[in-house]
Image 1 (cartoon, helix red, strand yellow):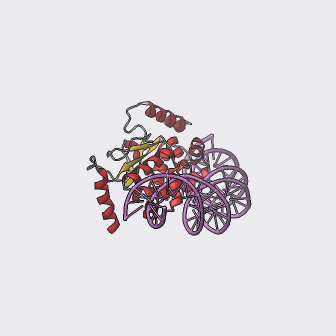
Image 2 (cartoon, each protein chain N blue to C red):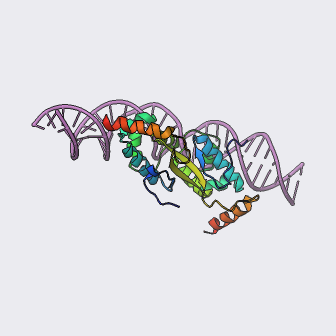
Image 3 (tube, chains in turn cyan, blue, green, purple):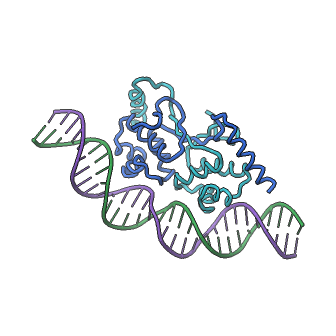
Length: 104
Length: 104
DNA sequence: CATGATTGACACCGAACGGTGTCACCAGCA
DNA sequence: TGCTGGTGACACCGTTCGGTGTCAATCATG
């Protein structure tokens, strides 16, 4: 519901694209006053990775991101997009969603 | 097997490791009664990727995951570790980090 | 039984990632 | 002024990811 904003407030931030995740990483890193190098060492990745990820490189290894987020005291969540009407036969509802998706 | 709570409940699911994300993907896919092939086409990735990711391959491209989650009507969130959990542990750790690097 | 769909699995291979190292640029400070 | 730390940006290179193609096993269905 909330738009993208600074993370330190205790809110979840939706990651629609890599760029947004990158922004989150960078923001948090600066917030923590960590250098790219420090973050990289903390997360066990190379500074190049941090630099390139923050720069918005579209391809990045998920495992690295998880570790970096961990080093930043952030976490990754997976959540349903249209969560709500989910009953015993959730498949039906989801099927509808899918159909809609299909027709575009 | 179903180690992780299925997602269809409308709750966010923390992704601590790739395996958990994989489980989420697989669970949701089955929930939607999509074949690996269908999901792959929907997400614009290869069936191999879906298969391998679900199989728990540790390395995966973030962009692909995002697209696959999208195709599954799931989303990815980044949230502070101490967001939902009330544990002061994270805060303390963060404080320590901050202090160390501010004065350092 | 025969047919089709689904899935796990493998080989092949080009492309890209990611690490290491290195450079220049810039801000801050003694 | 010179020095240091942080950063963006390269080259080089081994690794391996991801797509295509293919195969057999499994299961449901006609």
